[in-house]
Each structure stands twice: as structure tokens, then as C-alpha cells.
Amino acid sequence: MESMESLLVRMCLEAATESADAVEKWRRQRRTLERMPSHLAEALLRYLLHRRLLFPSLLEVFKYSVEEIDLRGESCVDAEWMAYLGAFRYLHSIILADCHRINNSALWSITGMTNLKEVDLSRCSKITDAGIRHLLSVPSLEKLYISETGVTADGVAVLASLTNLLMLDLGGLPVTDSTLSSLQGLTKLQHLDLWGSEVSNKGAVLLKMFPSLSFLNLAWTNVTNLPNLSSLACLNMSNCTIHSLFEGGGQKVCLEKVILSGATITDVSEVFQYVEASKLCLLDISNSSIQSFSFLCSMSAMIDLNLSDSALDDNSVEHIARIGANLKYLNLCNTKVSSDGIGALAGHVPNLETLLLSGTSIDDKAVPYFSMMPSLKVINLSSTNVKGFENLTSSDVSTISGLIHKEGNVLNEVPSFSVLESLSHLERLDLEEMHIKDTALCPLTKMAKLSYLSLQNVSLTDASLHLISSATKLKHLGVRDAVLTDGGLNSFIPPPALEVLDLRGCWLLTKDVLLHFGHKHPQIELRHEFVETIDKRNFHYSSPSRVTMKRTLQSKQKQGKLSMSPCHRSDEIFLDQRLKYSREELLALQFSSTAFSTFHSSR
Image (cartoon, rainbow, N blue to C red; front, side, top):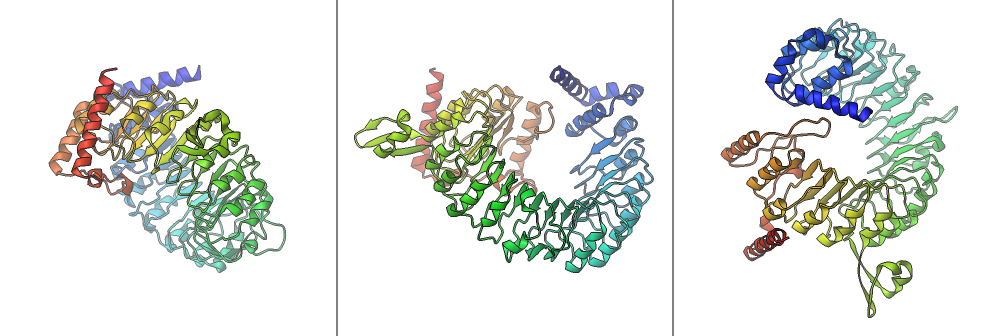
């Protein structure tokens, strides 16, 4: 019943935000909108925002219904928008992170708002001490985020008058020991971010004046040890040089989460000496200087463990196995663990849901061990030596005799991914930058719950798309840098649940065929360098029309090159993969694509 109601609500929201004309029809019904429940009004506002139909004056119709508004990253938000938001009678949360047009004067509009409890100005670089003074007229504030703004130590000091603050993010600001001392009146503070500040060990002693502090972030500071903070549950000291987390004396601190990523640790036994290790459930020591991992054995409650980019090897895996009973998340990416190390884990992690092994030296011998981890939902094997097939000799017959076929003294290749079919909970599989062939993917189509599959390999061809089309539960499919052709994409029948198809780096595909596929399957978000991508991960809305996509392509053609936003990751840059091949090899690929297209048309 609830799902039917949510579907009906979504259909109504989509109809109401279909176009500017649709918006104009209902915006005049102000009294109806005023009575709209807050969660529906906020959902409608989100739809308008993502369809670029929201403008400042339209905000006025929401002033009696919206309680929370998230405008993060919206470059159009400025003082005019804030003027309308200042009239929202029941607003208690406003998120303006990364809104680079927000300045001090824009904050004047929210002065004196009696219900406002949360303001996020993270990375709004135009906000300075003058803007902070506007916020002092909002004594109800409980959560304030001003990291990476233009606020100075003097501006931070005046926050002492906001005595109801529970969460305060001062990350990246020049907070000194003296500045921290001026905040001693914030006795209700539970969450404090001081990463990248100028706080030292001397200032760290002042943290005792926050009796309710449960979260503390001191990453990228010069703090090397802390006083005993009995209320602390989560501590982040990433990229610090650490002698001891706490100074000792009294009871041990019952931390639940510790993040020491990139930290330089002088003596690991000293670091955890005054921590109640048996209570720790999350530990991140990725990229740290730790060489010995025997200290893990006392952390029996561990659920989330990140050891990526560390010195961990097969000999140290036994320490993880001893605390594996409750483990749900394990990140071993870019460690020295091999297939033998995975074998040492098998049978000891019955509740493990996420296993990340990217960048390790494991091969296909490790794959059968995954079947002994029955709760696995996510596996990442990217950049490993796994190929999807294993060459077996007669000595292996006794262990997997039902899967093989003897020919003399050497046995045929066995598809190693077949054993993954027993993982009834597996939802996500990452197989990027691996030397796998099309045929190795056959067993993946039989996985009952697989909804996310990411492939990135120059050896994959149209045959992979053909095989994967029978994976009925797939919602996200990535086949990047593959030798896919227009014929292969035209004949591809997407799985019925598919929402995202990522074909970036597939250089043989043409714009016209990609555009045709997008028009034929409007419910699928198509990602490629020739197609404008629209983020549908959080909201459901109609795909861009043919005209919109054509205009985008025409504008790119006029520019003579692909327009890449500076905020794109480097791995999204389109590299012409044809540089890898000779003229003869390209002709051979063209011939193979024609053959594949003919094969499908004859079926």
C-alpha cells in the first residue's frame, strides 16, 4: 500500500513539474499550497530545482509549508533567493554548501528567524566575519557548518554567544588554542570539527570544557595526544603524528569509531593503550605507517575495518580472522594480500557484507573462497589478477570435480565466477581494469540479486552486452573502455530494471547511435562523452528530449572539442583509444563489429 502511495505521489510531482506551463497552472493556488504537508512541499521543491524550474519569486508559495531546504551546489542562489527564504515562517534547516554567490549581505535575510536550527555554509568562500555576526541573531541555532569559508579566528570567537549549538564545523579555518578557549561557553556541544586548524596539544587540553562532546575531528593538525575525554565516541586524527590517543589516568575511553587514515604512528601499542578496544566497532587505519597488526586481536566488536594502502600481508590476515565474527565491511585495497590471505579469512567472516580487494595481487584461486562468506553483498575485484577462468590440473579434481572436464593430464579452463552463484545476497560487483574476456561473464547473469555491475576493459566486445542483457535485476551497468560498436548497441536489449548504462570510453560508438538509444530508452541514464549526463540517482524525472540532446551535441561540435567541467574527475576525460591500435587492427575491429551486427540481425 505504501509503495502504491509513493508511486502516486511521484506521478503527481512529475506532472506538476513537467514544464514551465504546468508550474504556472498551480502556482496561483496559493491557499492549497499553504496547506500542503511539509514533506510533500519539500519533494515538490526538489523536483523544481532539479528540472531547473525553480526561480526566486516561486519560492514565495512555499513559505508556509517548507521546513527544510537543500540548495547545496546551486550556483544561481544569491541574495535575491535569500530574501524570499527569509520569509519562510517554519524553516528550521537551510543547506547552502558550495553556493559560491552567497555573501555576507545575503545572510542578513535570515537574521532573527526564530525556528532556524541548522545552517550549512561550507565552502561559501565569500562568507567572512561580518556574515557570522548576522547569525548571532539566531539564538536557536543548533547546527552550524562554516568550514572552508573566509571566517577568521576573530569570527569564530564570537560564536560563543550561540549557546544552543550542538554541532560546529570549523574545518579549514585558522582556529588557534586561544580561539578554542573563547568557545568554552558552548557546553552543549556534541560534534566539533577542527580539521586543518592551528590547534596544538596545549589547546587540546581545553577540549575537556565540552562535557557532552561525542565527535571530534582533528585531522591535519599538530595534535599528537589528547586528554581523557570520557564522552567521546568518534575520533578522527587522520594525517596526524600520533604518540597516544589519550594521556591515561582514570578509566579507558570507550570509543566506537576511530579514523587514523594517513597517520604517522610511532608505537601502535601506545596509541590504543587507553582505549577500551573491545568496544571499538569502526577503525580506519588506511595509508598509515602501521607495520604490525597484532593489536587487532582485542577488537572483538569490530564491524567496519579499513586497512587499505597499508603494509598488511597474508601473515597478518589471521589477526582479522580472529575478530571476523561481527565484521560487515572490510577494505583491503592496495595491500599485499594474495589469494592465500583470502583463504585464511574464509569461514571466519560469516556476516561480512562488503569486501574490497582492488589493487591486490589476488587471482582466480581466491574466488572460490568468496562462497564461504555467505553474507557478501558487495565485492570489488578491480585491478587484480582475476581473469574469470582458472586453469586446473589433475590435483584439483578432488575439490571441484563436478565443474571440470579432463583432457589428458591438463583440464579445461573452469569459469571461476560460477561459484559466486551461491552468494544469494550479492548486489554489487566491480570488475574494472581486469584482463577478463566476454565469456567469463556468463555466470554473472545467473546471480539472483545482482543490481550493480561495473566493467572496464579494452578486451570486452559487443558479446558482453549480449550476455548481460539476460541479467534481469541489473539497475546499473558499466561497460567502459570496451570495443563496443554501433551494431552491438543497436541490438542490445537492456535488462528491464536498468536505470544507468555507463559507456564512457567506448570510442567506436557514434553520437547518432547513442542519441537513438537514449530516445528509444528514455528511462535509462546513458553516460558517454558524447551525451549530456543528467544525475538521476536521487530524483526521478523525465529524460532530456531529443531536441535538448541535439542542441548539446551541436554546441560541442561548434566548440571543436568536448566541454569538460573543471569539477569532473580526471577519469571522465575522453581519451581516444584508437591510438592503441595500428591501421590494420582498426580495420579488423571494424570487420568484427559488422559480423556481430549481422549475427544479431539474422537471429
